[in-house]
Image (cartoon, rainbow, N blue to C red; front, side, top):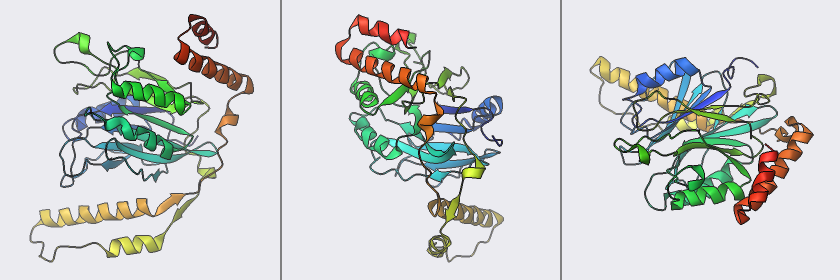
Length: 328
């Protein structure tokens, strides 16, 4: 593959203030060289400029009329992508891109489910829009005894049911990702990955670094996934759409007396051009042939394990659990 996914990994982190922890994030990027970084609780708002990360493009979605929440994606600047428009995500915060992957397009999304009651209810709508080939990660605020919690909350119950109904795969880190400041017994696994069921071989680990109360998680992708094959990629740009978008910019009529005012105007123009390009450039959707990448005997084992897992989830029979272990 040409360049971009040599590290074959995606990082996710509830960073709890991107501006405050930007130096820590730069250190982690230099250490692990992820192709994509998924961020939650960026705490950015419209008046704040985006921090710069060398070699990466920052895509952000701030929480409207608030200095809290917010999600973002950092993607290496040599990976072509299409920014997805996810509708009905007012309760759950999400930002997603599609990138070329083998002979298809892979949707990658950063998700933050706030702990407020009922915030999880748009998750199904979000996953319906991501399509059949996706990797998502973030802070789900989902407690479930299946992944070590003392009790299951409504979000944890919903995520468990959604994974089963969507024929998806839940990738859980081996240790807690949210560290309680006073009571280690309340440490919890809140940050994890959900992918399409064919992507069973994603490996996930917790990174010990970081001063946020959430620890970053690192997901290593299967060897058969190749993100960014330029020979199979075509991008279509609507230049008329860009021209219209730029013509609608309203500039202040006052003069710009200082160098600082000029710099701010240049940055604003740059931001408008980037947004116009993103909204008017689309990749050609290629045929979904990702299932053929997996050997037939492995695919049969995956189906057998999936059926056994479904039966176990409904009946909790120990004999069925034995069958699941034999298919691993």
